[in-house]
Length: 324
Image (tube, rainbow, N blue to C red; front, side):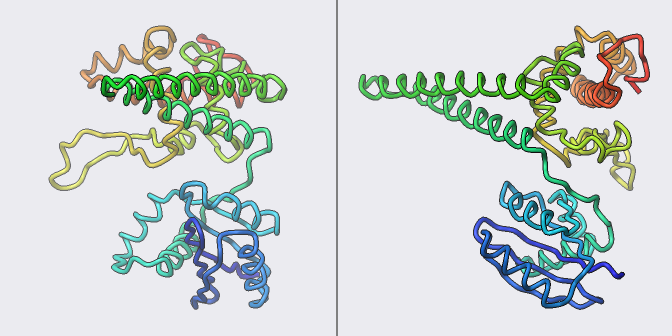
């Protein structure tokens, strides 16, 4: 049975669909809410599609509800990295930039690259992600108020208002942190995974919880290199023409939250994790720049995290296969 491709370009209030059937495109616009999802399903049925592969970009959070709805309808769903779609469009020398054309590009990408199938996160992970997003938002808001206080005028009422706001955010932050801790401890699998990750020198409780929230479906990855690529921690090499002497850099095409949460743990692990401390020393002896070394340590730390989660064994510095 021939696979039919549906490319979806999703915005906050609407999404464009490009249905690709035997090299012909069919286009329609829908509201980005449940009514639109049902209309999309009816539109698909109109063409008597039985084997559908839907592809969309991971743009903000606008795609999540639609992806889950289509998954529950029994369709194969893929969620592509926006950078991959952009690079694909550039390779096709696409000059027009419209939602309709973007949906077609996504369909073309799906047809040629066959991206892996997406599956919804378990409820406990969704709840954990929501709590962590809220915590991040509160911390950002609190920092903004702190910055305003530092540059605030001497007007007493303004300063008191800012201080009151900062105190409010502090209370909310502590409340959400307790909710996160309770949520993890009340879910046996999350608690076990957290304990496995915190057995790695350099990874504390907060880092472990953030890794679990972002690194959801381990079965999607056959090895640690794929996990590093997902996080955008694989090196990007320049070996063409005048770029021959440009030093490799991190690709940064991947999950930025996962990269961000590994930064300070890598700094800590450089001193306290025996494998990473030795690894950093070897890189330094080769004359590698400090930021190159730090990027390599982040990647290696993620490799080790993947190893303990897949093996279900705590970190053991003598088990050198974790560092491969």
